[in-house]
Amino acid sequence: MEKELNTNENEDRREEVVTERARIIGDAMRKDRKNARYTIREMADLLGLSATHLNRMENGYRLLDSIETLIRFCEILDVPIDTYLRLCGMTYKDSGTAVSKAFPAVKSQDQENAITAFAQTITSRILTADDLAQILDNVTAYADFCAGRNKKKESP
Image 1 (cartoon, rainbow, N blue to C red):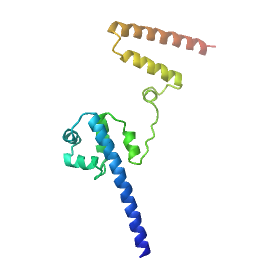
Image 2 (cartoon, rainbow, N blue to C red):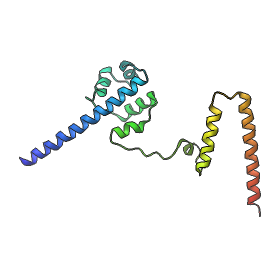
Image 3 (spheres, rainbow, N blue to C red):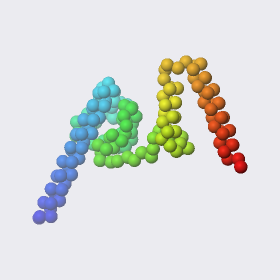
């Protein structure tokens, strides 16, 4: 009898944790959905759920029931998935920055900073097509210069 009581206490505690976690996740989902200005019906349609189903998740009565739903939710709202994974009690180890993923040859923080600054500059809306062409010409010329200088260093 004592063992049954212990088991029931553990189950009750797990249920409390799940319920609390579901409420926290639901609150975050509702906040992010509203910040993105989606109605519950619009978001439910985009997720392929009923509005009732999504409402129950947002109110903590139902947990997120699939990773696909979580991924789609985060993609639609453009929110980082690791935020929700942490709320679910999971961790996500990123294997690097966007720059290091796009340019695996980048080995230093200085290189990464240069690429980031360059990307910010060329994606700003203040540059004209002529400005971008001039930048491209300068970068190409500089790359050629560096390649020549490196060849000289490698030669005996």
